[in-house]
Amino acid sequence: MAEQFSNLYEIIVHQGQKRKRKTALFDDDIKISYGEILERADKLAAYFVQQGIKEGDRVALFLRNSPEFIYTIFAVAKIGAVSVPVNTFLKSEELDYILKDSGAKLLVASEIHKKVVNENSVCSNILWEGVSSKEKELSSFEDALMQENEVEQTVRGLDDCAVIIYTSGTTGQPKGAMLSNKNLLSNMEYSRKLIEVKPKDRIIVFLPMFHTFTLTVGVIMPLYVGGSMVIIKSLQPFSNIFKQTLMKRVTLFFGIPDVYNALAKAKLPWYFLWFNKIRAFISGAAALQPKTLEAMSKKFKRAKLLEGYGLSEASPVVCVNTIKKQKAGSVGCAMYGHAVKIVDADMNELSQGTVGDIIFSGDNVMMGYLNRPEATAETIVNGWLLTGDMGYLDEEGFLYIVDRKKDLIISKGINIYPREIEEVIDIFLGVKASAVIGIFDEKSGEIPVAYIELEDEVESIDEQGLRVHMREKLANYKIPKHLHIIEELPKNATGKILKRVLKEKLNG
Image (cartoon, rainbow, N blue to C red; front, side, top):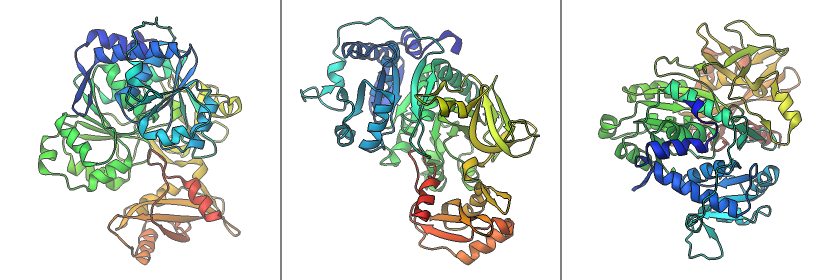
């Protein structure tokens, strides 16, 4: 299917003609057809040209989840420019950094982010979502969509850059991963096949659209397939997600571990469990706890929970469990025509079951980091992308993630994988989540230390009991020397725990 498109704009042209009247987007009570998306993307493209945006220019999106986000992505693609979706949790200095680094010529922003946007000193050309055309001093979507002019498509090919996604910056300043049309289209096609997405599917999108997982698999893929999308603008109130899932007959539910942890514990009404149409839950961004997988399978007997693995540099999906076969604790198999290998420090392939560095190759590997040739050369070696994660493959090619390479703790020359310890701590009564980091120790080189976040209603846990529990399941050298109870573990927008912040706090 991907072969028929050479860029993102061609997706909406195809669907706008083939499924002109079909509802593509549900935005609360508003229904938006494929034909309307195409028409609005075309008008917006004309507006961008009027603003001086040319082929190859960057347009930054600082937008909440909205139909306008989608119009912008396709409008930018039509004129051959490059979309730069920006994390809306960022503060003004962080936004400034990305606008400067990407060289954005225009910023498309939501009115609810006005305070942060107005503090930015880099980009003065701003188009606002959520403001009325009556506010004459601001350029609004209402005005932009009044365009009567038509602009010709600037045709971009498979190898041209379509989107720049800034990595979440768990270490140092974020880097812009340049993703080509081929990167994104191949990833959508792979995901479509593995999750068996059909035009009749309805996908709910409540995760931020700026995130690469949501953008590729949650936003563009349903439109690529000809399905429908239910847009949730805000996570609050959380009950609205369940209401919309039921009312709009959602079949595919994309989430992150935090959402599934909450869902596993939530007291859902019987009618939701009885009448929901969900056939698959997809999880990405971070590892699922085994207790969550177990609780979800008991609660939702008709749906599969499919854990996957990816990173921005991979557009983003690398592996996912399939509808036909899942393995608990695994993130699934590599995509068709792509290869995942486990190697040692010298890039020699390791035998099945041996833990090593995870590398992969395929059409989804980014073009490189914007303005960072050295970082690109360190990350892509002979066509293989070095993920920075460690894991192993089983006899069927299913990948198991062990840990981030930089989180590895080496104590007296022995490798300690924090994730193994975290999984033991996480099943202890009263524990919501944990993070284990290594700290310097004169005798051992490094020793593990644990930070623990408690369940919402729990005020304390039996620390002695936890130590006994760990001694039963872990070798003595793996048991954390110190346990710190913390109100809330620091996380990024997709729920990944920021261990860097914990290390800074400890060294602070």
